[in-house]
Structures are given as structure tokens and as C-alpha cells.
Length: 305
Ligand code: DOR
Image (cartoon, rainbow, N blue to C red):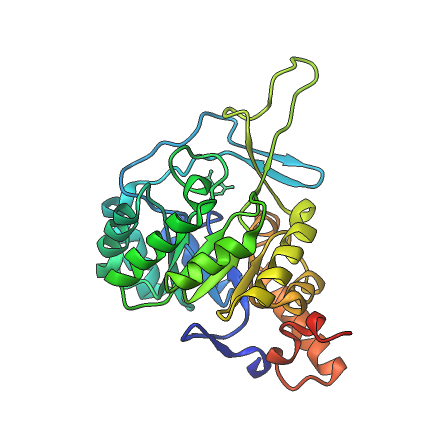
């Protein structure tokens, strides 16, 4: 697999497929399982915040024909409650472990990042993009000034790479990407879920306990491809692509749009070894096309005139 080995924001990855935040990321053991059995090149935790949070009422996640709709509401045990899990993951994971964090202000983000430093995460991913968490997430991530301030505040207190995860629920995602870059981000991650809703026609009620939620999976892939394509043009820092990737073809498409690496979320609910499957497919594709390494396909769609 040497074909696929490379460095992303200073982290050595054995392949470009990364577990997306939120899926199998709440325990050290599940993160390790995705790295070892699943073959992920890196794993991202469920987002961790400044205080314990129970999240939104059930049902908080439903499967649709075209993906998943969720409104988990950032449930998490807070950073002191997650330290041991992160430490276990770091000691036992076959791949780098990235801590996803959130807060309501720049100083809360910095507090959570600093609080997790003793467990030595390999990088931080700043979640400024949850579409349904009042005061958190997209409330911050749709405001360029706040995104810059949050990024700078975390960069100030850590010396590992900082990735910023962006929301597609804005008029122009490149403005937000530029703000993250100005704040000192080492990479951006695009996209978080797309705002959505499902209604039960018998009762007439929205299905999710929170009513409104975020759509992931197959339905959002073209949205993600377009966001990654635009960010690749607008930014100097790497763009990590996420949204509806479930096959090697999806991953190659995302990389051709400009993704330096690809995250996989929804597809992991069907099979944990989706990472190995995608990596074998990418490797066979590179071989068949005569590309000596994976960097050759990153942003390729921009070169076609
Ligand atoms: O769709 C999402 N759901 N995106 C997030 O960033 C958080 C998550 C949740 O916990 O609700």
C-alpha cells in the first residue's frame, strides 16, 4: 500500500481515508476498531464540548432512502469526561487520532482544546458546523469573523495541526474557508450535514425529536463535491473532503475535486471495513491509470480545460 502513504498537515497517514466525526467516535475502543479492523488512515472522535450534554430527544437519527437524517444535538461527556477514552485511543490506535471539539465562544474552544492536550491528540478538528445546536456549530460557522477568532484561539494554545470543519448551509462556503485560513487553520474539512427534515404523513409530525436535522450520505455527495471544488480554488491549505463517500469511485471523485484526503461517515454504519475497500479500489485505479502516487489525482478536475 505504499502508493497511498503520504503526509497530511504533518500527519503521516497510511492511506487517505479517515473516519468522519460523530460515527463510532465516542469510545477509545470503537476508534481503535475502525483503525485496526476498518483500515482507516486516521480517526476523528465524536465532537467534545465544554460541559456534559445529553443531546436532543429521540428519535435523533433516522435512515432515509438517500442517506441519514440526524439531530443528535452534540451529546458528549465534556472534555474531562472524555480524557480517558482519548488516552486509550492514542495508546492503542493503529492510526492518528484527531479530537473533534466544539464550544460557544473562541475561549470555550480554546478551553476544550487545552483540556484535551494531556491525552495528546494528533490534531484537532473544530466543529463550527453542526446545523441544529443552538449557540454552537453553524451559529459560529456561518460568521467569518467568529470562525477566524475560534481558529486563532485554538491555534494559540495547541501546537498540533488544526482542521476546521465547515457547514454547507451558507451562501458562500469559500468566505468561511478563507476566514479559517486567516485564523491559521492547517486544513479545512467540508462538509458537515445539510439542513433537512422528514415528516410522518400519518401523524403530520416531523419525525426527528428536534424536528429539524442534518442530512448525510448519498444525497449530499454532489453538494460536497461542489464545496470541495470551490474551496480548492479559493484556499492555499488542504481541503479534506467529506459527504456521501461510500465507494472508491466516490473517493476518487472527491480527490479529483480537490480533496487531499477523504472522510467517511454514513457508510461506516453499513460496514466498518469500508476504508480498506476504498483504499484497494483507489490503488487499483492509480495503477490502471498509470499514476505513480495519489497526489497526481488531487484537484485533477481543475486541470481539464
Ligand atoms: O449532523 C450533525 N450532527 N453534525 C454535527 O456536527 C453534530 C451532530 C450532532 O451531534 O447533532
